[in-house]
Amino acid sequence: MKKILLASYTLLLFTFPFLTHAQGTLQSLLSNIPVFLGNVVIPFLFGIAFLIFIINVVRYFIFESNNEQGQEKAKSLIIYSTAAFVFLLIFFGIVKLFVDTTGLQNQAPPCSDYIKKTDPSKCP
Image (cartoon, rainbow, N blue to C red; front, side, top):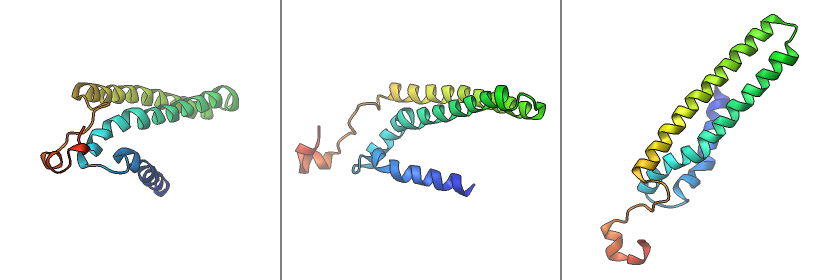
């Protein structure tokens, strides 16, 4: 459990500048979270689920072909990884729908009136 928390904290630490573009406002951070989920996190999870699926298919047909208990365990993990694919597709669809309907993708964050008055060159 500690390794999972450490890995998630490390992932967050390394991706935090990507989320905020190393500078910016809370608005830009919030508008980049769904884009980051759709472009980085979900494809990474698809890769992990696919890797687990392939490993367990190899275990089922090659390594555990003589052991019925091993085949049952590999079969259950194949089912779990297939279920993970389904849930990831649903989650990816929800995130993509949210990003597309709200117009968050490829859009600059809104510029406040104060910045427009003090330094108009910073606003697009």
